[in-house]
Image 1 (cartoon, rainbow, N blue to C red):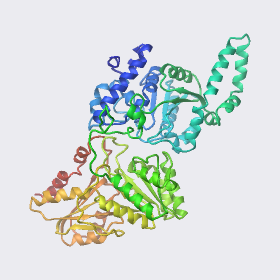
Image 2 (image 1 turned 90 degrees about the vertical axis):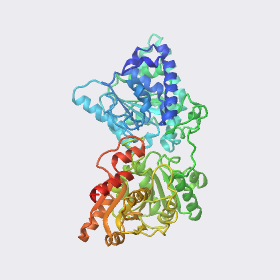
Image 3 (image 1 turned 60 degrees about the horizontal axis):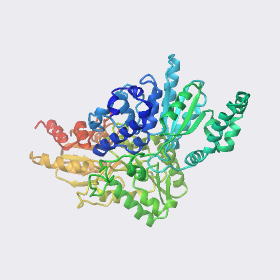
Image 4 (image 1 turned 45 degrees about the horizontal axis):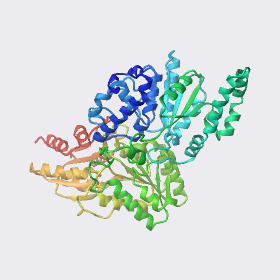
Length: 619
């Protein structure tokens, strides 16, 4: 195999050009096999194989720098930098990360995981290069989906001022996770269909070069290139901004891309190369269903179907079903997503209520302020968003929603430890950053029935309110406990004195396990389903203090600024001499890995809680 010849960075340059197509095929076969076994991001990586090959052929790593926007499409880059043998550990604890990591390999120039950051980071690396007298090339690779994020335009605005080389590659596959939406998508589509301009330019230049005064004519025509471009490519946004635009070019043609990249390296300002690719290329199921194969669990290669049959409903499924019911009863209920209609469970809502569904693209900040506008106009917007993505809109939540005390509902998916995507995706900060904002109210359901009850409550509660829930199968235990949801009121499940467990959301199920294990030690254990993280139920805590030997708070969130601190503060103010143990995520980033392993390592699994309680009681 040709792929076996690549052991480290720059080995691809030893491959004969005639073998590039075969190498691309071998990389795709390798990726499909490995991702089918372990899961991961498939479609984006299959689409970027030749593009990544061209970058590695045109650059010298690690001296030159490649910043992959989001970073989920960097698997080929990892292979070409000598990490092929590590793919059996992909996204496993202690193994190969699913995103670029500077600590993993010198060729990874910048840690990424969220969208629309690559141009800003690239600009920083360019200026650092110039200030230190460097001559290396810096390339930011950004998808058309990421161009729906406002941060990308802030960076493009600055890039236009450069008088030094900087290459931006626009990887245009007409997708983010779902199909792209909005003006930029339509603009790029117009460029895709403007091949007449490209053909005209090349053919005219070739013809004139053959004539006696052709060079003078070509130079003269170049001075009027903007007028010609305006005839054939509507707007020419990038050139109008001050960037040199090259393309569009076939993103699966290695030799042509190498030529353009090498041309771009000679230009002393910012250059944008428009590359067209096909997401999922080379694997029919991924080409036909790009959203399903964006981030996939292990699957059968022959059929493309998941290996594990999904039997129980997930948290997202429950949310999806309840949203449809609420919308059928209340014409003011709207749904907003930031390019995640599949991941947040809003596709069915979109199909049934298209006029009340809004996909704003990868633009969480805009999504929140847009929701504030809807609320100010009398609607009831529900913003469905992953926990780690909502943190990008902190200012908008604080300034545009909460200062005005507007009725915006935040449905926070993927809260808590999410596993294989690692540090950039662990949803363990939302309780803390939302708790710091006045007028915000925060809930967390213990099971699928409570999620339904809380969402109904949130839609009817006229104030900013958030509900956070996890990834995967929804808890279907404790159906017998279903007290009505009341603002700021907890639910006491077991009132037996002794050790009082105050658990938030997903941790209520863990508390049941802790209760059983401590009961085997002869201890009395009471359980409180916190329900509300802000405001906390001080009456429930005061009641527990009457019979408590110890209070233990449990949450799948960082300890700093979250539920446990509020309970501890209340206990301290009562001057009761009751020990309080706060269980939560330590003050550190949590890497990728199996969620059960991560819970054990961070000390929030049942065994860890039991151990801490027994140690505190000196048993």
